Image 1 (cartoon, rainbow over the protein chains, first blue to last red):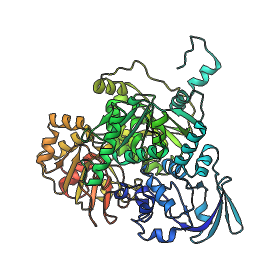
Image 2 (image 1 turned 180 degrees about the vertical axis):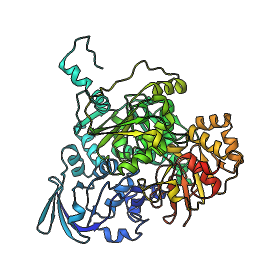
Image 3 (image 1 turned 30 degrees about the vertical axis):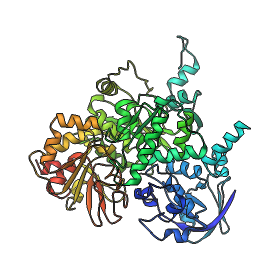
Length: 164
Length: 431
């Protein structure tokens, strides 16, 4: 599973209140959520997000368990998030909604805003120009969930499997 | 359960050396686990509230299964947008009510009963359990010695159906609390001290196990606040090793007696250890807009404040209300001041003890358990340029309302003194 995109670079400790404020949590509609992603820091974010890869520092997605944070980023067209570390709940929510989340130490010092990067989701390798950075790939059940497009699709497949 | 029938073996010795995290997750998974293992575990309690609960139900609907692994294993409390400030919130609560009725879930709690995490510890959680909730502050239940984690709606839907989930066994980190805190220093100040020392990114992938040297010096209310703030430390879980204080709490609030605790060998292997001298912990705040932007109160004592919020699953327990009432009694609040007890039980007890009376006469608005102000939901949303001091858990940009508002997180004594003086203050300044 390979994803390619240009980088939108963010800092450390990006929290879920910034990704999607609580006032939007009465909906799970991806189209609605996409329009409000990162609203507190950049209300126009969704306009430049399509096809991008977010690169961020430490504990990306810290804070609340709101799954809408992962849904909003994915629905805005972001292809993957590569961060130096993730908050545990956000990481699970990303995988459960088919959004690749790759841990890659020091990525923020190697990558600039607007760079074109290629991410191998399974090996965790991130290619920037001639450089290859070694991140942590996704494997096992998490990879199967991601490939199915998220936990709902994965569980449906299991249901069908057990009935068939 | 492990029955050794008095026969000592290498395996028993290995077991004795395990940390609390490993012991709980070994039992829950049915195999000996080590940090880093990805394991499937059985879950004792699954919980959700209105604002994540409707999402949990949506996921179940999409998967095509509406089931609870066992009816008494599912705990629901309507706490976030309660009482409903708009039609959509009311619809969400109606859907969850219908669900609870249809599946005959005995542990469904109506609007006003309390904030989910407080409801869980007051009624259900036991030491050694695995507790999963669709809310990040699920970590609160760790105060009773449970392994408790917040998860998203999809994970919680799956756990509600199957009673199982998967997780990565975290690296256990040991913190020892020594001595006893000074007057009006609570679990909140101790949490901020940990965040000051380690910052919010240090504990990723770790579980914090807290050992209190003198159990009675750090009461359950304070422990609940520290465990609650465990998620702000980005720990995978935070748990207090059960001790005499744990059994006192369970006996006095629930009438449950536990005869012995799961001990942890002093030589059990932790990734690292740290000690906090409780006597040295000072009045602290987390300044905008990060939980680890910790400062001494004196560094920010010129900050003028519009609103004080004393409440939430972090800072709305009886000891918080007691401290605020004792400081504000006979005085008038200069700021607006909103007080939200964490549960109906807390509210009733605060009424009996005269705390509500003292707070109301000081000019505070007191209401029953809701998450409203803490999440910028309702009942006190901040406007542009407004400054709040709050005993809640997060001060992120826009958390309590406008992205142009600012939030300082504090314990109850600093919040109460601030309300009286209209600027960030220590309790000594008003007494």
